[in-house]
Image (cartoon, rainbow, N blue to C red; front, top):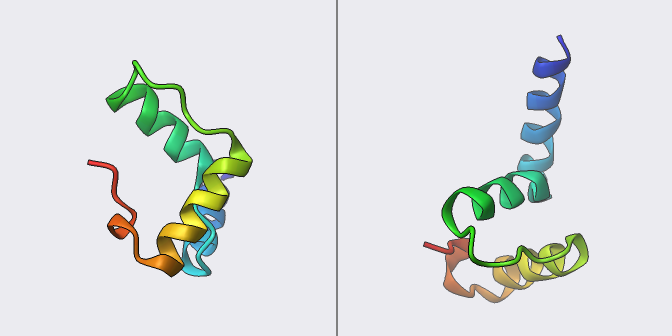
Length: 61
């Protein structure tokens, strides 16, 4: 049941525009292991800038 709850929380956050930092960290580890991931504060600032300034559509690859 906790797995379902986590999925529901993640979905709700994405619906209101709150990005998933943990997913970002997993993505960085899987696809960019040579790069250090941004800290949580920098990540949220980056996502806000990308969302409202239209920078690269929110995609890294």
